[in-house]
Image (tube, rainbow, N blue to C red; front, side):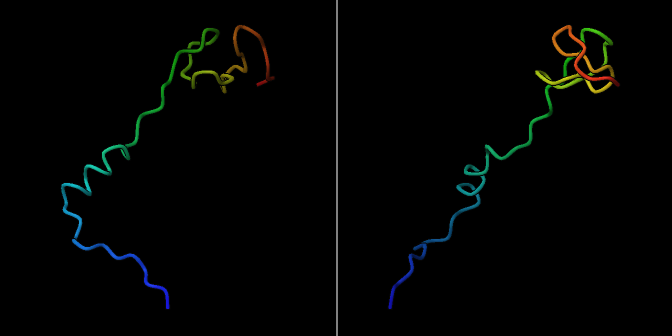
Length: 60
């Protein structure tokens, strides 16, 4: 019969929270569209006007 690894000691709140220190959510990096000045994600087509990098990509 195989034995499963079991922690010897309880993980303290400090160690648990230090491990989770990188789990925080970060806000989306929004920039102004060069064409219509609406907020959009970087490196994405603008959802309000359809422009990307100064070119019309989508008909909105």
